[in-house]
Length: 491
Ligand code: CS2
Image (cartoon, rainbow, N blue to C red; front, top):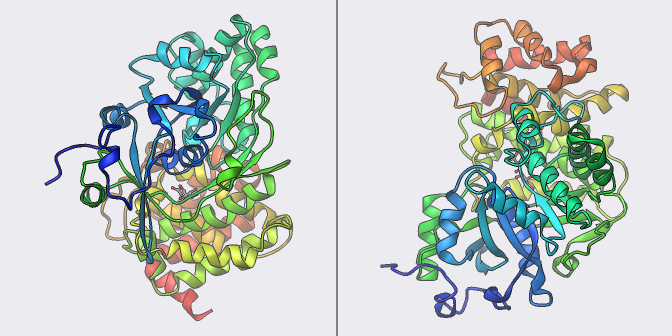
């Protein structure tokens, strides 16, 4: 029976096989404020940071939840410690991570969050707030000035709700205190994420006033490519980790062995030596981002929608559907890879094969429903940009279009048996209202194409694109996803 919980006090009594911090977690100070302290941050950037803290304890992390207190409630009684469980078919490894110094909840105490961000010791503000957290138009990359949170934050700058509002108010405080701006570090799955972030932050600052706009114009915001597959933690994970540790851990994170981080070198106030744990610093990250978004995330979304519709609960189950591996492999090899700029340091044949192995990892229960979330925000950079490049090159894009059509089938909110799907997407309500009354595939496709923030004006007007989507959606509606996927098994 597990009675105690993970904490600095119980750390010394964990089984010898569990790795633990090589530094004293109590001696850390905050150098990074991270907005969006979810599982992904705790399995990726917090781990790279944990690996280098023994040499520089000034880079501890203050994690901020923008909305819910759950992570803080779980981690505060544990002195911020949590377990990273790394697993694949070959086995598992447990490691306690100590880099999170404190967790704050923005809705409860915005002043404290702002004062941490404005403190001289804070040199980096990093983010994993998901695509929709940027409050931008995904098709243009510009700030959505009509977004309710942005409007709120412009009229109540000292009590912001959005990440953008917090960043700009903290920068205003730093400007008033005569401090240099912190470096912004976007770790979300957006192309040119640092550029997108800087653009929305700068626009917001300009809307607040020219002096602040000028100060923000000088800020460093390097782009990054980040990669590690991190499914949501389940109660079964909690039980297994507690049994292995001998103490309870309210919020462990479970992930795969693979991790990758490529960053642009632009940190005027310094940075941790993340390269000691394998991070790679480059001048321009865009080719790495395109590769990851178009191959990994493009395949992931395709697997998620088709897999969900065909009844697969997890990615590895979806990969076992007849025809799925051939479909995903072909999507990458035939359609996505030809659109990528050459990358001398990466062999794309190996990269593709590694992705297939990672999707097949039987030890991870990565739900198709989890990846299916927020498709309207994800599709532009995962599938639609690739399709644009294929159209420009006069090449076929049938598998990519099938991924988009599967999203259309899914986001309409009715599964193949006519039951409701719990669609999580900022546009879910609008999409359901527009498409549920329709039954003809061509009408459904037209309704979707009217979403210019997803498709832009160019794709909406492209008759061949419309016809390709209509054909794919018709097949999905007539034959069902499993049969359509199976037809790729005979390639
Ligand atoms: C996934 C990503 O949920 C999703 O949309 O595609 O979170 C994916 O697991 C990561 O980008 C992997 O690095």
